[in-house]
Length: 231
Figure (tube, rainbow, N blue to C red):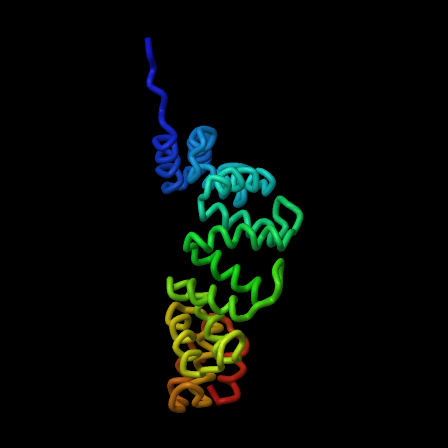
């Protein structure tokens, strides 16, 4: 008699069902069944569970093992996670060169967080020669996908003229994008531009609005400015 074997995709979907209702031990069980059949998304998800102690004891070494399996199959999210492990020395020895290698693989597939991370490494010369112009290029790719950290970083590059010609108007544009997503540092920076009339007409009341939004999230610089302004 022939018995039907549960496919890797079916196992992965079972894992997703349990993960979504926070039954992580069951999710891990099904992810593992799919991962052992070579399912890249399941391998990545299993790695994530090990990295975060979801349904299993936290174990970065096992996380790296499964991220590597998925990354080598070309799965962008796993490539980013693996790069992050090399970046911060989680489960492996810190290696900026390998971090850049995996960030690039994910970035070239359009992974926004990896694009921003690669930009950061270019900006700071970590694992690769410093190149602010390439940092700007990668920040922009991620920023255009709506990634808030990249939007702020790109704004900062335009504000300081790093890797691109200084342009306060474009700095304000990207600061605003990030500020509207709730980034407290971007809110403070946008408030500063409003107050000083950089890249826009000076608007003190509007600057106070942004300083207050930033301060409400605990930004100490914004709190200090508001105190100085009498708020």
